[in-house]
Length: 139
Image (cartoon, rainbow, N blue to C red):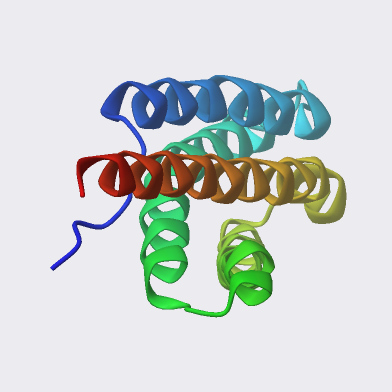
């Protein structure tokens, strides 16, 4: 049985910490108000969500990439499915915590999530091609 194609742990952790810093900072900035804690709460919510979701994105994209067999669907469907699920979730979390500027808070992160998922999918595809090439050279 073929071993699933994966990304490195280094790639996963650097991506997660980058998401926490970038999107937590962005959420703090866009929702900051001197009279309330909404900036801090929104920043921590978005930063923590981005950190955790980066791992979920990578795992889900990797799982879908290894599960879907049709090449054209394999390259785009992991991104569509993953971003749709995680975007719905984070929007509802921000509604629950009372983030004032939800659209401005999540839209940049969702845009980058699309690019990140596509990057991960194409990275997995390249790793798959290299793996297949090395297997062909062995036989």
